[in-house]
Image (tube, rainbow over all chains, first blue to last red; front, side, top):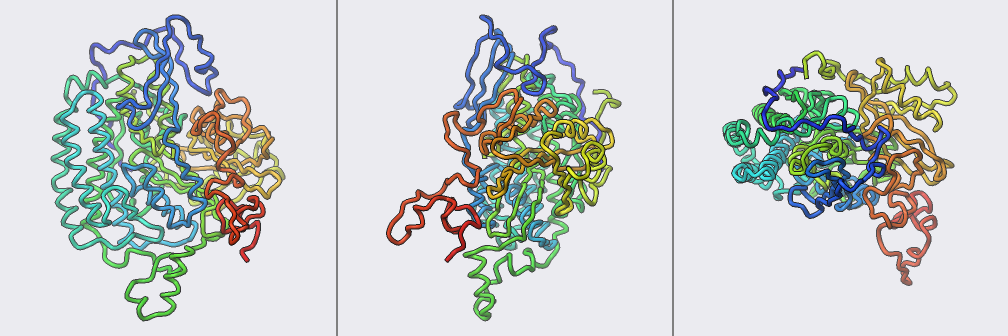
Length: 428
Length: 200
């Protein structure tokens, strides 16, 4: 893999108060000390942040133990958005599960569809033709851009920079226009299905995507102009929420949170799926592992995603988008008029679905937040026997207590914003 | 961070054809062959080990440079109610250095005490709480074993196969089978245990 040189940055800025000496860092779990065992003396104050706090990006509750304005311990409380998707999967056919996956990471639904579809396709042993794979890549990367734009806008908004929010929303709307054009829905597209796609893309798709990728790099320059060298933004983010590489790995972090700490792990490079090995892109990594590095990594990721989309749309092959396995995908509409077998197959697939052979598979994709894994077990029935979703935000959030230890309480919003959590992905 | 201290880059190493074989070298040194069950599905290796050896094997897999499985990917549970030991508990560990993935599996019953791996991998702590919450897995030596997703006063463990979550079982004259217990309920009804009763 070609790895970029580490992102620039001097790492030193005035006004950053160093962590207090002599106070042991508390690792919740693992290192023997935990919140319940901390002596809450008269100088420690427990306060509640969330679940209705606007900077918690959903419904996250943080119980903070404060010593003056300094956070001595932080205990995230999740589950407010628990929907029981994993239980629902067990009573729906594989194709019916696709709309459920949309609702988990609701800022980048096509990547969830893709993760589920790839796991089911591995169980079935079917392969999607190149055109289908390329369109999947385009849709997934566009939704990664849209997701990062929301993250960037809200992260900047949390830190008081309202302008970036408006700019990011503008470009995100263009991505949603493309989604609407190909699937009829702006957000919960369910466009990627097991065995291929909902439908081939309309002919306007390629010009729309071309226009977007031609314009987008200049837009990223605009955002960077607003934030990257902004002294207020830099003072609030550099040196804050530092996490070293070994800690990030031990917590199972992935995505921008892990790469911000300098570990160039990206599922698209480590185990390429859906033709990602045919595209030339770089994996940006940070140096210091602070909030600012995670910001730089994600902004750079938007540029790389744009590069991938550009290559995919220029090299878009012809041919079918769905697998040729007639037990999995519906027969073409025209065939149903003439062929009794097609009509029967259409009826069988629509009502009963397909039955993958018994087996177990773990399949991961790189979502906008990190490694999104689906552990799927089939018992030969038409519904998954068990489908465990490894949400990337879940592991990333578990490292939050480490990152905000001994930081100021006002900086907690910056750290929470920098790990880019989606509560639908955490609570599932 | 100075350049010399940066962690090893995974990417030049292509993923192995069969994932997890590297781990078996280490596991075979610790666990006798007759206690070890290895299965390979879709090029992914699952090593099932005795419950008592879990921590020992996990520590070795993390520390041994031949393996270096230092990233906890996830932990989960698969409920097979018809088996003697109904829970198949799976730990997925990733080696970034070797670009490899291994699944450690242990079988446990409802009453078996599963040791916590939170001291080995801090990231496993929340996953273990999730298994405790949704499956009722008995985990011991955990730093903070409370329900993580559901409210503390929730009754039952939803991801168990015998936990009915869909459809109020109301029986009318035309569907008396809805009043049956999950074990006797036909397979096509919500909440039924699969394979319990054949569809008429």
